[in-house]
Image (tube, rainbow, N blue to C red; front, side, top):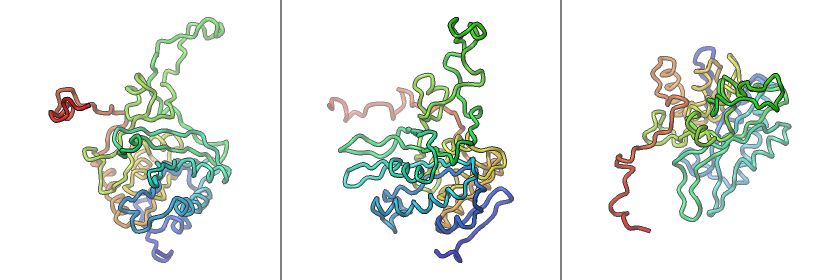
Length: 316
């Protein structure tokens, strides 16, 4: 698709959607204007939207490198990139993509603030290695002066009644040791921050499968809360949030819902249309979203899916 074939639509003053190649479409965005980039680039693992152009690992990294370099230019001096990736698998060998991308961002002068682990219950099944149940999100900042809003993403204190010991100094001795607004969440993410913090400091966000209320036609969609946490923590009201691989529109939805402006790019006109439809439903209050912070559902022992099948009885 040439630059002449790039198509842009606007959904009011707070939404721009561009259909076309990400590298070329980024030229339509003014340098130094984007506060936050949240994206999950294609993993090159054979999804429907990748099959026309299969790449080796080396070709894949070479394809995304100039896109990352251009994304860097779009950021404000205090801007951030949240780059969410999984693994590339070749002949049964696993290549952790965050390892390869880390060096690209560092070469540009960006600094890694967190390597967040996103764990989920259902993922890539395997027979000759352990099944994949997590992905990583790299949070890079362009400079040492950056936005970090901790309060909107705090989790409840595990021990709210804990007091400072006498050895902490007379002024603090006997006073609550925690923050009344809540605790800084870990870099291991769950959907139910409170429940999981009380049992295990993990941010355990379920991925989008058949029964998920956010499911669309997109085969590799990340959940709204993952994007929402990044938007709330790393940007402010009215800031521009960009996703160069917008897919099902999750980043744009999280941005608009939080009072930010959104720019989305995708080579698929079908996914751009899907994003427009979902944003329209959001504005009308009709978009089905899994409520942030809601506990991951565990079926009761009496539920059919929790019972051991009769044909499994006695199996070792």
